[in-house]
Length: 317
Image (tube, rainbow, N blue to C red; front, side, top):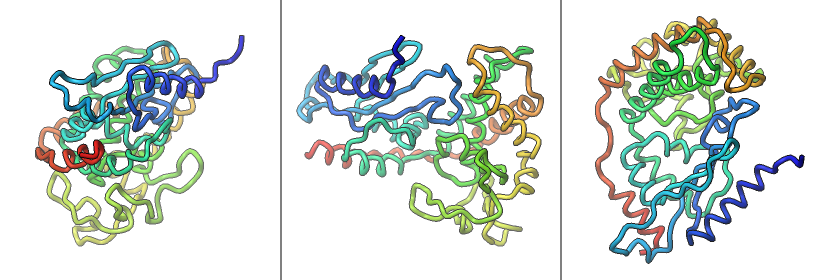
């Protein structure tokens, strides 16, 4: 049997969607485990896209089609949102669609998307993100991790959102999509042997500022400077010692690397015994994140003026 050319199938599907519905795809990305970096051998492809109709369609009395569900089978899951629906979600700080914007697995991108993305990411909300990621982890724990044996894939559906919460605490920004980026929080070596800690990073955050090489001037949920040393505002770096003090221990890090290794060679349906370090962290961190998400102030902007301007510019009105 001829092996499927998945990349070609995805591109062909996007072309067919544009022709059938008379839309223009602004962005198409991978949004699932393949984007997160821990796909199993039998993982499907979760393709998400944002599209726009012809400008005149948005002047209709009856609403335009704002969701296209194209394909769902064992290999491909392809669906997308109209740009107006997407912008409304950005305005509410929806973390899922923020991850679409930040995905590094891009199947298609229109030139108009870049400026739209910059506006959309200004609407990131710590409160909305913390509640979303905590809720995802807690739901996964209750539904899939209570029995004696578990599917290792489900560990990641709790671990990743909990580490996203930790990233938001530390940097007050949208967390990275890739799981290995989140492991930088441990201040140790990544799976490629590169140093996560010890030296200040030169990566830039979404606002274009060096968020790891300089002390923060923003406050965390408790009103403290998350990166100051002794409260004096000195630049702080990722370190294994600091991470361990905050519950991100070397033992947990080693267990996660072991889990990553196992995940790449096991089928998603396989049942396995619990890994004590991981399930222990998930349980305790869910309790911790519930308190933090409940206490976080509502920082959603409740002002769509920038998004309205960007939308009108996109339509050239």
